[in-house]
Amino acid sequence: MSTPSSSKGTIWAFWGLFVCLNLLLFLPVYLFNADDVSFLPSHGIWGEGAPWWQGLLVRSNLDLFRLSAEWALLVTLGGLLVRWRRGPALWRWLATSLYLFLLIYQLYYAGSIRIYGQHPLILNDLVLAKEVLPIYLDQLSGGSWLIYPLALLGLGVVIALVVLLIRTLSRLMARMSGLSLWGGLALIWLLVLLGTLGSRGLDFRPDYFAVQWTSPLIQRSLVMEDLNKIEQLPGKLIYQGYDQMPLARKPDIYLLFIESYGRAIATKPWTRDAYYALIQNLEDSLRQAGWHSQSAYSEAPILGGKSWLSFTTVMTGVKIDNQLHFNDLLSLHPNYPHLMHYLKGQGYGVYRMKTFSKQKASTEEAYALQDNFFGFDRWVKHGDIPYQGFEYDFHGGIPDQYALGYFRDEVVGDTTKPTFLFFITMASHVPWFPPPPVVADWRQLDSITEDPYHIPIADTVTRRYDRFMARLEDKMAFRYAKAIRYDLQMAKEFILSHPREDALFIVLGDHQPPALTYYGGDGLEVPVHLISRDSALLSGFEAYGFQPGMTADTTLPAPLQHAGIYSMLMRELTTRYGTGRRARPVYLKEGI
Image 1: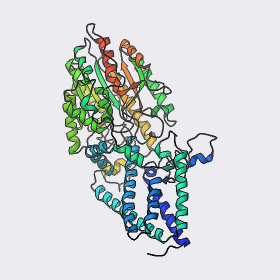
Image 2: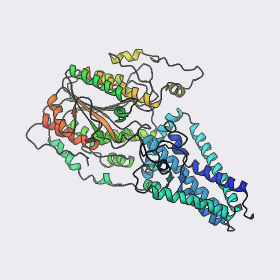
Image 3: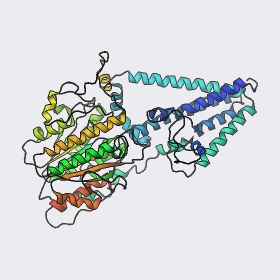
């Protein structure tokens, strides 16, 4: 073993590698948020007039310049081991393994937060990876299989780089004098202690702290609360009692989820004014045609992505915020008394429509499970809709207006049977492609066979996926605003052209826009609009916090939760349209 020295080159090389490997641990969070953050530290979180040094403890800019306490601990352990005969080899193996684990977890954590706005749960995400990850990777790669070998190659390069750097760090550490090594480590630990103790009790996101401990996040990812919640379902019998509450009057019911329609659309400066102008126009148009409306905000069970958890929560009255509970509900309770079960018993034709086209064998299996659980009379899928026009997105390409028009005029037609439809829009799905035009007659969309925006795409761009991505000209936030505007206008036209007087439209969001709001303070709140010609029915919803019209107060806490919408809806439907003098159903704001 070489004799320890105080060579300046050795000292600078050691601390340079220490800093580089430390910064690399924060690279995933920075890259996932690169569009919204600056490279250098900025954006204090304390407000105007706060001392500059507070930014050394907590700051909202997700830059690289933070200190990993676990990495400092690993290097300190190395300082103790490298003087032993077998110490350097032992430390290199231990440091490489733990460092790669930290780096992979940071990537996993950053991806979960950015895509879903949710702290990762390993048990849940293993199931999610099997059923959803193949679809996500297929979209990300445009269907190319090259993403898999490229991902493995990239992982191999990272592992090789980390092995090389830690080996070099070990050698440098062995050559350093005790004063040079332990003096620097003492300063590092002073920063760790100051950062840890100075930020104790501060209620900020873990990502914001300048000194970060990853181990508490890992521990949280390993613990899943209420794992057996669905097996028990203590309040299930409450919903079973709905079968004894028949309806004398049976309006058509349309449950229209607008994908990514979150509170952010009404609060962000880049869309707020345009949104309120639009929503007021919708309200005026509906009112002039004899339609009344009520609106409120509701807490969805999830923040971004995983729409199926949100709509299942609404239709079952059970808060479902993870894939394990979703799968348990569908597999363990095939006869569950959900909304569709009740409406079928009342003589409704119960339908679902889905215009998403791409799916793998694992998702086909999941869809079959959903079909069995919800018991739709018919599930209208992408291949059932004879659309011939321009493809507006790579999700399926069918305009939402066309899909709804086709359902109403061709699937339902002239039937006198009351209709229930559950539909989730596709135009407002990430990455938010330029939306279709809203036309007077949905059939006109078949005749639009070229891009109505005439977005120029080079002839050298030949792959279908690449041509779609070339149409994403605006920034993500503005694409999102345009997509939501389209789906609200489309929904208005669908309602105004509805041929039956007796209908209830429930237009609501499933979650906030992914990748735009996790750090924006909009929480889980999404709009809910109730639209009907029966003002007496809608007035009953004011007791739950609804406000007349198409706008709701964003300064107040959301009065609703998605898990309570089922019992609220049943309470008001049976009160207004029910037979006999049975007691009103109990309102369960938080569901069961």
